[in-house]
Every structure is written in structure tokens, then in C-alpha cells.
Image 1 (spheres, rainbow, N blue to C red):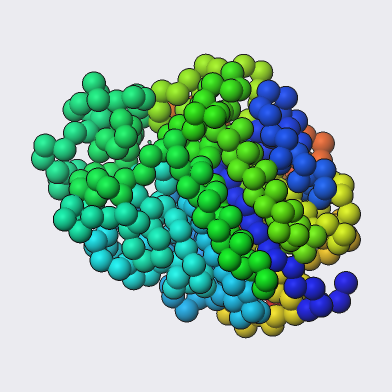
Image 2: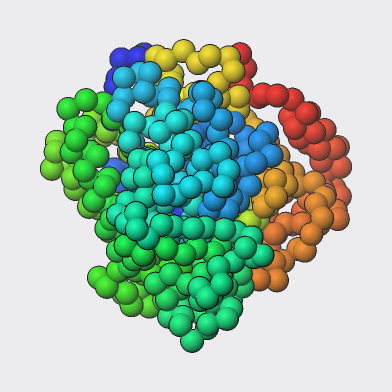
Length: 491
Ligand code: NG6
Ligand code: CA
């Protein structure tokens, strides 16, 4: 395919904490995901598709900037009032697409910071999605378990009554006297917390951080799926005559898991299964709208997740108890936060009818590569400072080649990195517990280097570091070299 000839609409559907084994087309038998499965049946399913990180902010940072997250010390899990971590003026995936003539929009979870520090939520907010390449934006600032529990429409809190201003703090010393918290007022909770999440109560659920005011603007968790879906559908309807890019970032299945009434109790796996089914329904409604508008054939749809799965992520929602034989990470070891593959290898589907033949592939691909690959598709030149770690792997993404990346750096929580090279994964020694005492996930920390041949051992059961010492040494040196450099993308 020659570059620059096709100008499909581009949609990235991005789940939050969805695991490699959580959807039917990746082996889940107990959670109905007919719509994601339909997307896979009509598109290309990647068996080795990766996020750059096992947590949200760093993953999304890479998706939008084409840079490894550990290059930016601010790219760690952000508080809800953290400043924007992408400096305005940085070339981004949406800014590149905008230059290529696309209308660009974001709907859903942001979690890349808002403002320049200590934002005033009652005034137009500087520094957000609109300053890094998006023409339109309807988001939650951080996560559904963090304050402020309000939607941002462009630069403003949606539905705010100026007579009832919002105040937010993450400093316990500044917590608002008289405002109930999960810790002090557990009798007010509809869902208990298991760790963290004991601060301000919104909708009967205690969150991370403290807020007061803004009552008319507070979200209702059970309505969030439809609120974001409606905004995504409106964006597509508004832009259906010109090329558009939509980044539609779901809040599911991140905690707190509170499905709408249509899905509550539907899967038998508790709220975690139910919100995955709900997210799948949103995917279906969205794809149906593309069909209805006659856009499906000319729209490249990507579906993926920001990081791997977690069961107990801080609320008593029975996710562990009701999981049964469902394996959220499929055959992979670890999950969210982990250095093992369960942290970063995620569902990854690309559909472009008539252009990309349905099937599956083992090509090694990563979200960080969308930037350079889509620039290639559209014939957009990348300035040398742009997207320092994004590789043009367009032929692999379109299923024309089985050759993706040769190597990839990914990180577990706290920017602890490892190197993937060919089929091999090298995890250097990292300090910390081997198993998280709160989430019960194997984090991959060890005093010893670990080396796995994923071609033979997808479950990372047997480390070969002691046998393959020279390979381990080579990979350790290569990882150090990459971390010391300023870019990996060839200029
Ligand atoms: C952790 C939270 C977890 C989740 C995560 C971010 C606690 C104890 N745990 O700090 O619940 O919010 O941050 O998830 O507060 S992510 O998908 O946005 O990275
Ligand atoms: Ca996440």
C-alpha cells in the first residue's frame, strides 16, 4: 500500500484494566463479549500486542506521544488534580492527525493531568486535551475512583452551579471538615473499600482524594457508560463527512465497578464481569452507529486496553470471590502493575474492512507505535523530535507482514523496566515484594535477574537466567543502553 493514499477515519477504543483473557475472542468463556468478538472476527487479532506500561497514565502517555513513559518522570499514576504531563507544543498523535486534516476528539478517561498545578475547577481549565491536539474533549480528569467526580466538557466542568463551587485536595491535612469520608463514615457506603479509597464519599462510594461542592455536576457511576457512549456517538455524527480521529477511552473495568441496571448481575462474576459485558455493549452500539452512518468500511477501528487485569483493586466488589475459573490474564503471569506479561500484553484488535484481512498474528506490536505507523499511512512526515520511541510497523499492523518490532521496553509500576527482544523477556533485579499484599498480583520483583523464552513458555514459569547467562547479560546491557539514550526511533 502506498503511503498517503488512504484517509480512513481512525478510532481507538481503549479499555481500562482489561486483561488478555477477559474477552471471548481471547479465550474468556464466562463473560459475553459478542461485540468485541465481532470486531476480532472482522479484523486482525494480535497475540502479542502490548501497552508500554502496566498502569494507566504511563501507557496513555505513550499512546499519545509515541515516547516511552520512563523518559518523563511525571508519567506515573496521577492524582486527580495533577498538572498536565504532556507539555503543550509536544507533537502528539492527535496533533499529527489534525495536521493531516482530521477532526480530533477524546471521550472518556483522561488521566494525563489537567492544568498547571492546583487547578481551579470553577474556571475554564488551561492545559488539557485541547492543548495537546484534540479539537473536542469530554472526559473525566483522572479515574473513576479519584476526585473530582465530575465530567469536563472542553475546559469546563459540565453542569456546575457557580453558586456551589468545587474544591479538591489530595492533602489529608487540608481535608474538608464535616465532609464525610469512607474512613469516618463507613455507614454511608454502598460498597466498602478494601485498601485505599477511604476519602471523600460520592454516590455512596468513597474515593481517592477529597472534594466538596459541585453537587449538581457530580457523576452517577451507573450512568457513566451511557454518558460517554452518547458523546462518542455525537462526535461521530458531527464529523461523519470528513476524516475524524476519536480516542474513546472507556472507564471499565476499572474500580469502582458499578454497572448500569441493564448489566448488574448479568455475568455471575460480580461487578467486574458485569462492567466488561457493559463495555462490550458500548462497543457494539458504537460499531452499529458506524454501520448506520455508512462509515464502517472507511473507518480503521483499534480496540485495546491500557494495562492488564486486577481483581481486588481496592473495593469489596467480590471480584476475587466470584472469579471462579475465569482467567483475566489468560495464560499470562501477573496482571496490572506487574513486570510479567499479564501487566502489559493486552487484547489488541484492528479492523479495517476491505483493507486488513481478518485473522490473527504473532507480530510484536505496541501502542507506542500508532504514532509513527499512522503518520506513515497518511504520508505525514514526522519532525525529528516527535515520537522518539514510535516505530513505523504499519505493514504488521495491517496484517501485510508478520514482522513487528524486534525489541520493546515495557514497565511495571514505578517505572521499573524490562526488555523484550525477539521471543525473550529479560527482567532485571528490582526491589519490592514479589506479590502485592493488597492486589495479590505477582509483581515480578526479584533479587535475581529473570529471563524467559516466551515462545516456549508463555506463562513465564521457568526463568532461564542461570542457564543463558550471556543472553541475560546482553539484554541487561541493551536495556541500560536504551534507558541511557534519548530515543529509539531512527531519524
Ligand atoms: C492505585 C489505586 C488503584 C487504581 C490505580 C490506578 C489505591 C490503593 N490503589 O494507586 O485503585 O486507582 O492506582 O489505576 O489507591 S490506573 O489504571 O489508572 O493506573
Ligand atoms: Ca488502567
